[in-house]
Length: 64
Image (tube, rainbow, N blue to C red; front, side, top):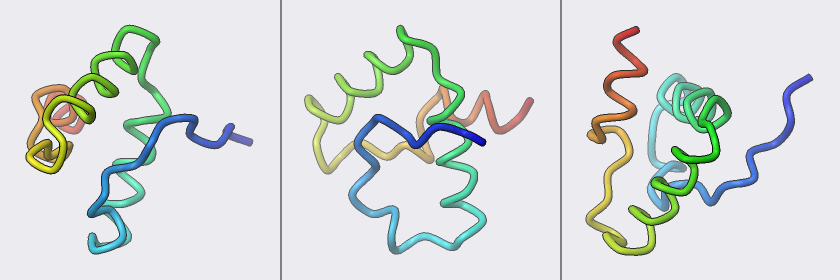
């Protein structure tokens, strides 16, 4: 059983289709410590302009 995500979720996640939500959760669960720090910095510095779905890390992960 996977551990729950210990990271804040994007603010608009509840408006997304369930398959996209699942994909985001899977992506966040596989981040290493360095990637988690980068994600938290992006959330705090970019605020509402940060879009996880358009981020380079997410797009690379999704295309694997």
